Image (cartoon, rainbow, N blue to C red; front, side, top):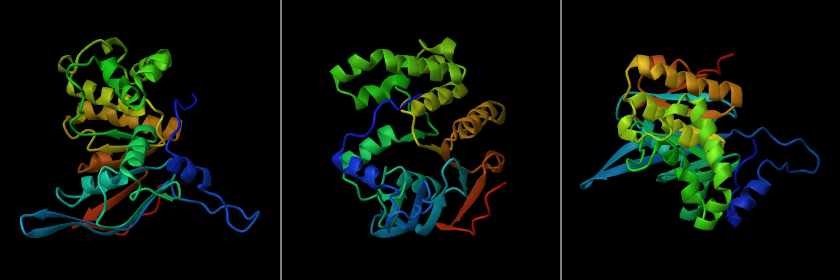
Length: 266
């Protein structure tokens, strides 16, 4: 299925037009990680004190990889994910996506990037209570388009949303409000919403954190299927070793630093 829409920001168009171009004539282009961080530092202030959270993070994510970021509470896992998704900006260092730096983009360009190239899943679902399941999945398209633009493409968007809800097993719940769904169903609706724009990267922050293992297993099965069947790059934060074990590779954060990265599973 073709992408619903490409970025309209001139700067983003320029970035993606030049991404991966080889220097030096006909030489083959270098392999570029799908995402990468270089020397990331991030601190938060608590009164007069600066609390260091990330302390020099160098990390790569390969295209089509399922990467888990693990560590104890407060080690900086969610902060790192938010920096990858441009929800926050580092104090120092850089974040790259498909060979282009993204942490220093203007706010509008970062919004476009998240809306059209990054799918995001959160622990607390963030479904809008007044909307039906189908309308929640359609919400990113409603936000991205003008009123006329959405109305003109509404059939295409609706078909895509219905297909996604069928894929995650919620075809019979399209008209239900979030309060009528179980925790597992709400998370599956959130996954469908994150996939509406056919993102290149899926960022998941504790996607099973509010679910018991029996409910969480189908969520992980869905993510693993997306990774294997659609070659979707997934970066997932979790504190659960069993959940992390479903990924291709695990990166462990300890006191804001990455322990030695293990090799990719073959």
